[in-house]
Length: 120
Image 1 (cartoon, rainbow, N blue to C red):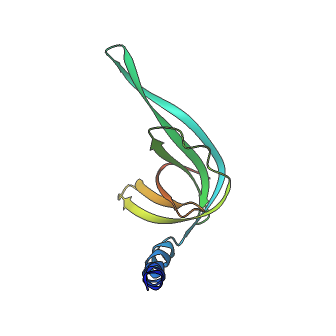
Image 2: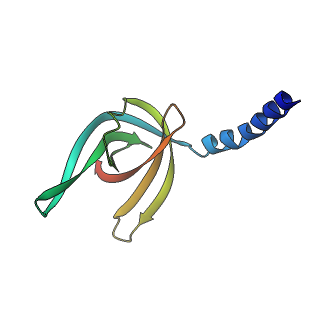
């Protein structure tokens, strides 16, 4: 009886996972990927550094540079196609904008990337 309940409870959680994946409808094509470190000011003889993942992407026919800061390097993001969700989109009357995408990886994990550049 315990085995049946375990299977049923696992089966009930699948639709919520599928629904989460369905929220990621934006197609992102990564054409360049690199890791850099950004070090802040020196305080008491020490500097703090953060790892930054920088991606050159194509989203909806536009070329963007995306960045994500991490405390330690997670590796270079593989080139290719990903799904994403737009989590922040602010556009000013001047045409300037702030956007943040939540990028979904093949293992279904996600990471937020901020748009830091736009190219033609």
